[in-house]
Length: 146
Image 1: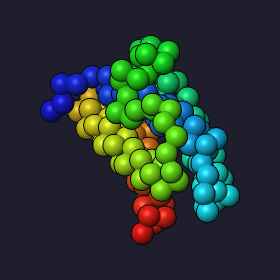
Image 2 (image 1 turned 90 degrees about the vertical axis):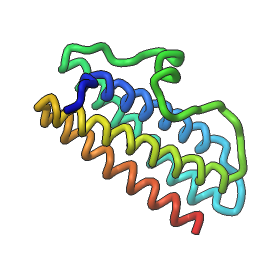
Image 3 (image 1 turned 90 degrees about the horizontal axis):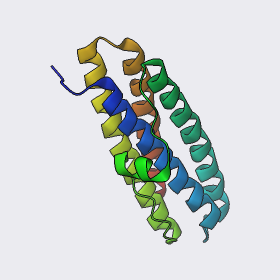
Image 4 (image 1 turned 120 degrees about the vertical axis):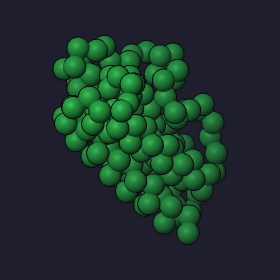
């Protein structure tokens, strides 16, 4: 049985999602190379979805009576993703985002376990949806690398 409060894991998931959105948005702005049109569009689609997901996670935190992480320092502290603003080549961007999606999916699995232990099916369902989205994004990005 998990002793980690659901809101603690949800806060990590929300922060990680937001930082991944920010990183993806930065890559969208700065991607260059032979795959520019495809990656520019893909990154936009992904960051739009991530910002929306972060908003939903923040609202879930508030519904549970917890504050949502806010401010770059707090978000960075809680996130498993780092967004250092480095501009790298297009394949390094794809690789980094694939790895980040897998890392965020692991946090979502932690939310599932904590929510299951706490009898919180709402948070569990939300985290399950996030796992599916992050694993799909990782698969799509991985296919570009193949």
